[in-house]
Length: 408
Ligand SMILES: [Zn+2]
Image (cartoon, rainbow, N blue to C red; front, side):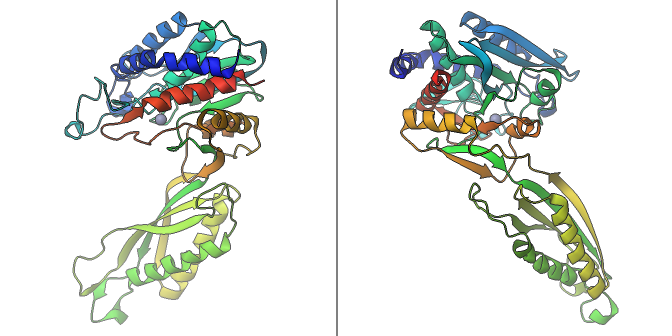
């Protein structure tokens, strides 16, 4: 059986894939933390569909959640057995969706999806149903053709991705031994328009609040007070030196360097002729995984100490977010090579292993020592009004998964 035959089969599923998308999007699976019921109804429907379409050994791992009417958040693991069980090729997608947001910004009902110009519109159709449906039909093609993939294929359809994954992948990783070191783990929940981005690494995120205390006084009498704003300006300028002190460059990332930027500024005094006694600004740092966040923080504290001594101010530094990066998946990992081959065969493009500036759910796998790659071909309409899925991307991504299942 050649890949071309499977690909033709997947083309023939196009309308069935659209149908499944429409049915899934009609079951709003919003997390209780965002005001919804959770994913139980959508999961029940999915389990029925998986059973009817060749999946074996379907397990639902229920994370207790008394805020959800069902009392739990469902995480589905479903297998399609291959010729060897030495490893499992995993595709993980998430069943939950974010709320629709301002309804007047939508051209239709976000939970009654519509098809127009080669796209399906509705909440969740891209994030993350596009590749959930693609992965289900990639397996269905093997089943309908009576084919066995080289290795077991596993689909993980998890809950709670949009609100932290504690009751989703985080819970599954605690409860289950399903994932093994040699497995290939694909997380099709990030990507770019031509399907060339294979995300394998992330930077640490450090957000800081700087509160500088001086002494308020009249604008004409600066010697009677201490200008907190002026001291804070010196500190912000001094912190630009972090670029020189943490200069490593890693071509996997765009931009390839760590970044240290002052961002938000709170108002201080409301009038021009008062010298502010208090000043607050914030900083957003995205730090390469090669550096320790604590080393950056220590250097920032040193700079603040110097400004305190020079201006006789007090500077309090507070974490707003401190998310150290997970260890990267190596660019030579098997999952990356498999994706590169499949992307080349299906889309005719060279995939590129890349890092991004923020976190993805794949970090949970990486922290546990599993190689995981995020990949998909998408327009990044996730979380927006009129979210859409390009139908060709859904069918194309199904071919990419099928290609990987076929690889020896
Ligand atoms: Zn997502």
